[in-house]
Image 1: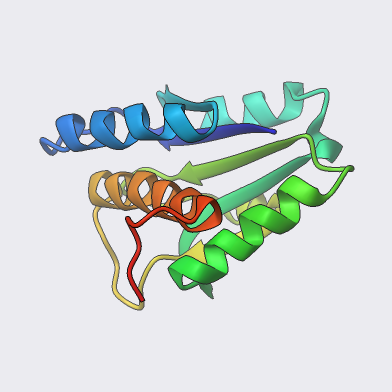
Image 2: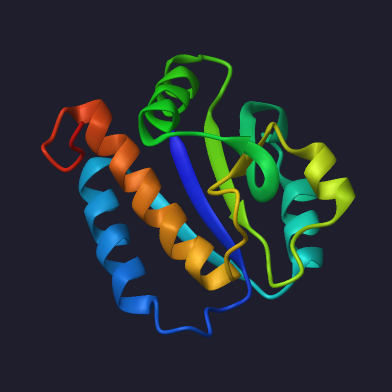
Amino acid sequence: MKVKLVKIGKPVLPVGPLVDLYAKRLQAQNKVELQYLKGPEQLAKLLAEDKQRKQTCLVLLDERGQALSSPDLAKFLRSKTDDPLVKALTFVVGGPYGLSPELRAAADLLWSLSAGVFPSDLAWLLLCEQVYRAYSILQGTSYHHE
């Protein structure tokens, strides 16, 4: 399954080295693409051009979304991986002002990292780590402890 992590805007906070660390680790587990877009308009265009949109599960990070524990995220990933109708999984972190109601309505899942609100750069880092952790749980590595 193709997995894409998308961030609106380049990070301003110095999270790059940690994001790169998790991206490298993710590549060893599953082919994951990280992509930066200039603005939400590019995301809307990307989604409109996605010929496989019906086969792509779109997950937007949003503070009003559903809270998922790390094991719950792993179960979600497994369910999408096992679903023959899903060919791609795209996670999106919005910019400082979040994402439009239209984009949120188009999402298959709104996912909240916390009851608190994080700067988009920190949410980007947390997304990378949580996706890595979820794949680690699925592979039974010692990274996640319960």
